[in-house]
Length: 300
Image (cartoon, rainbow, N blue to C red; front, side, top):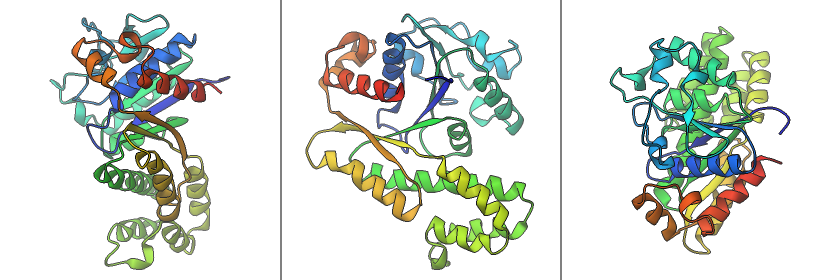
């Protein structure tokens, strides 16, 4: 990695193991000699430090938002693992989950200036504007899900919401009201079946502003999420990634990579009970081996 890698960890719904993957991936990359900062951006629901086993939290990113520190770098605390620091999320005492647009821009700029080799962004579950906006500053996006049907449907909804958010920002900047109207109409497929796919939306928008659509296609082309299927228990589960990738390509027009399958592993439950990350409690477990493979893929 010649330049800093900013890797967002996304989860379309809660309970898929997103933060667990974030914490252990950060440890794995640090063990490879990378200078890593893990940032808990699950605003209002922060738990990354707990998974890492950090008991004393001296600073949080709230301190930057409330101007108690000048830089986000100052809030990075020792994780207990060599080469790894963590920036803890807020307690939401100051309603940090609902930060203003200006505060979000400030936070994004500070993330870009962090002094390290790898930034791991542990994002909140779901597809809120905050989640999507933070995801689009990353140059790698890991989409963590499980084989359950509900999780898979959430993946589709999440990515489509992310694409709509991106198109809204681009079309708004183009200052053409009719473009925004197309995006809004596309959200109601039953009333506008001709706008069912993102490609249909872009084709319709191209009639109004070809230049805006050229930019949109360029931005969408650079958003290639890596799919991680967690808690795999059967051979059928191992086919899920391919199904998700095809769904995203056919209906959202997004290319994706099936990066890894992580098997269901009792070591994860045991690690949680001992308040230690799996990479530390059970480094030879199947879960840990899978995380190592993901880390290796991110460093090539």
